[in-house]
Image (tube, rainbow, N blue to C red; front, side, top):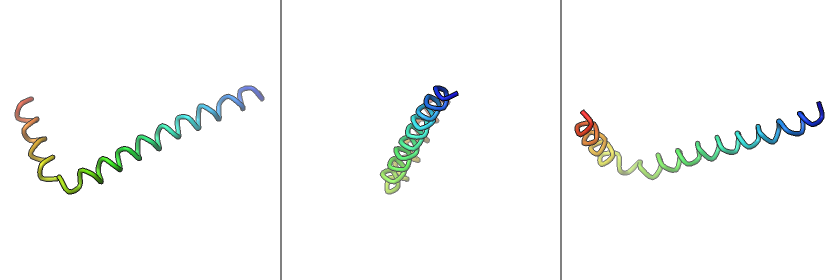
Length: 52
């Protein structure tokens, strides 16, 4: 049990760090794309038109 208890928290912390970094990157991306909402919307519309 001691080995499992020592092994599982490391995986949990790794997953938590990855999740926090992922959310942090998304937050930065949304913050940087905030002033460019019009351009991103038109870009998404163009991409949707090309795919459709």
